[in-house]
Length: 563
Image 1 (cartoon, rainbow, N blue to C red):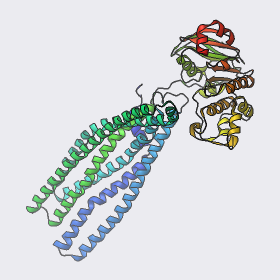
Image 2 (cartoon, rainbow, N blue to C red; image 1 turned 180 degrees about the vertical axis):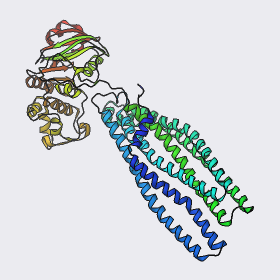
Image 3 (cartoon, rainbow, N blue to C red; image 1 turned 90 degrees about the vertical axis):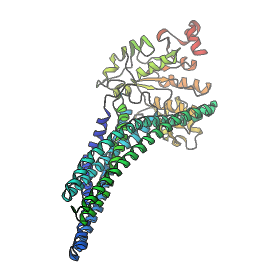
Image 4 (cartoon, rainbow, N blue to C red; image 1 turned 60 degrees about the horizontal axis):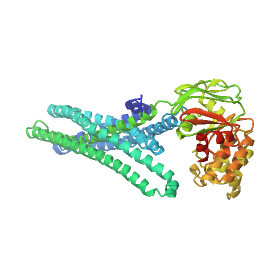
């Protein structure tokens, strides 16, 4: 898979930078909160000095009142800083999810290539959430830095050695915390990849559960998922061990640092360099510093995981586009389709000319040839060589929406969506579309008659409430109702019985009469209603003639459609 051109750090800072207002607000309020927290030991020390050492009751009450006001400010600043940080985090994650979905669903494609749907969903949820959490981590980090700075200033005013100890020791602790987060970042990236893969496989297996049960493949599917899930569990445990190791070492270093601060403060008090109130303030400040220093460990872990998730998101957002968008338009579509020396995938120098209004069958001896042709016609890819033309205009010169509206490719595995059956049929139909005729031509009228509420019967996601044959007929009705000038159908009748297939073939011929239609299929019933059939064999155009004549005269064709 091609690596992303978009660096993960750009995704990270763009996501957080988009919430600059909330981040700044949260940081300012957090700085105020940490400043108040750092001043609490100082105020307590002053209260002890006035009330206990000096015996000044008025001074004691005054500083107690100041302490109460500080706590009121702490309450409000914490509440609103947390609100701003949470809003920044969830909003950044939301924008990332939206951007990921837009990129995956972009007409030019490329982002979903090689990735399971569940894997993409995992990236759009868990990874986006982790990147969004970096906004809160920044706010906490800035606030913790402020708390340390204010604490250091207070200590400097009390004692130069204590202040210098904090000022010199804190950056060293932060550097060690950053270095310790590197293994966590690497293991977190592996963990997210394995977790996303496990989610993707799980979603894939659930989607195909009915098929798996039908062929008795549940044990193999369970074994496959167990193996992939075990890999994910191993990666998660490795990341958890790295995080626990980092937190444990940072906590140990932090404790040692604070013990050193308390020891130095105690010796200064014993020598009389600082008073009782100052000693209490110094010890309380040392205890206060546990909070900011511990928060730095959390911030480092969040940043490490955020960077790993941002790199995964960058791979999707920066994925190479499958086709190059253009802005050309067609004033009128006659329906002439031509392939000129097309090479792509397994196709080699294919020459094909389909006249307006012609119904042409395409038979391939290798499914890869049919898949490559459908990719080109649907503009999921552009030819490596040659050109695909519609009415003499290269498809690459047209806008994607323009080309796909004029040349509709209805693939074999098209899904239905949640809604009524009628909603599914009319999804792409215009105001004058032949909806009723499409329902009859596709055999969907029989489906309607057998459903409790007819066309208004609710259909579950991906049409799972319908049988395979019913889904296929509804999907064909949807394609016919779109009334595209050029319609390409890929195996539209593989899940229906022979009688229904013959009826669908006749309905197709009647409804699409005079409009260009391409049937990519090996079904004799469908091929029998075409004007002619072309045979793709080993990636090249091997023969073209009427279905009946090819059956009698061409061995490879006969094997493909009758075996």
